[in-house]
Every structure is written in C-alpha cells, then in structure tokens.
Length: 252
Image (cartoon, rainbow, N blue to C red; front, top):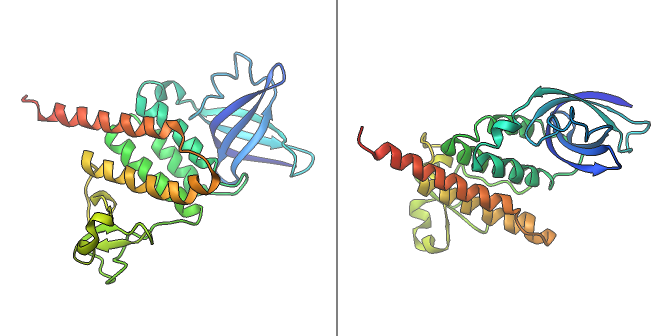
C-alpha cells in the first residue's frame, strides 16, 4: 500500500531511539499517523515542526497498519509561527480540535482552511475571525453545525442578532427580544447580511459562542476539557486586537 499527499504537521512523539510518530493533517486522507525513521535527526527535526507543510509518502503492507512516512518539506513556516502568541497558541489549539475528528476521515476543506489560517496568524483581527470560522467548520463536520443564515422563529434573513443555545440557530432581534438574556449574541461578522471585520466586542462574543457549543457537543460528552491552548489563543488575539485598535487611535 502506498499513497502521496500534501500534509500539515500537527505534532510528533518519540518512537524508539531515533524515530518519531508523526501526526499530520493531509488534504485527501484527513488526520493520519505514520512513523518517520530518523525523525529525531538534526536534518528532520526542523521539518517536523507543527504548522509546516510537507509532502508525505505513506507505505504499509496493509491499510490498517501504522505505516511509514517519507517526508519532503514544502512550506517551512514554523519559525515564523513562533514569533507571536496568537500563532503559537493557534497552531496548538487547531491541532487539538482536529484530533476530535476520526483518524483517516477526509476533510479537504479543513485542510485548506488550516493552510489559510496558518498564513494569517500574525494578524490579530484576521487570526481571531478565521479561528472562529475554523471552530464552526469543525463543529459542522462533527455533526453539530450552527445555522446562522435565518431566524429560527420567523425565517427572516435580516437583523439577526442572537443564537439560540438550544437549537444552535440564529434568531432575529425582534423575535429574540423577550428572551435576550438567555440568548447567545450573534457577532456581526458572522452574519450573512453584514460585511464587516471583527472588532474586540464581536470577536469576544464569537469566542463565547463557539466555546458554548464545543463544550456542549464535544468536550462534555467525552469528559474532557478544552485545550489550554484555546484560552491562550483567545487572550492573545483579544490583547493584540486591542493593542492594534489603540495604536490606530493615536494621533499621527
């Protein structure tokens, strides 16, 4: 058995004296594990860093075996990802999310989203918004997608302001007003009728929104807690966005 694919390194763990087990997100075959011989060598260690994009060749006698990876570097972005807190935490947090997906289950759109986010983690506004959309995409692929396109009560597609914590569906401002204190806020940048970037308030609301449904549908049923890297990313993204907003307000 043999195949080739593009992949993004999610992590590695030691295997024997010189080898490692690499965990990667491939474009066509989802999250996949494989042994890399001499993976702890000086030549391979810089390649096998989370966030790097590589070309993998997988070989095994049978499909159900762990198999071996031969890895060639494509885009080595790990060094740049170490420069900001949003990038450091973001890589770890997204890897933790992807581990909830079944191994070897293809999710090409998540691979493509991961590529885009990794190239934008240095920008706090873009990083936060893209990360929230990635969490929503993972929820959807796990079977718990949110419907943010129309009001659950009226079918209206305008003035959507809330998300029902029970159904995960959007609710208009008018229909949701009597229960506003029990609703989750729908950030404006996630509304299909809006065309705006995330600010501190809307990004904060978005993080609370995805955290609520991840806890209900993913963490709690499995008896696990959210990865610490997620909270690290949230705080780093909000801090960086606030700093950027303050800088913009300073006189020239």
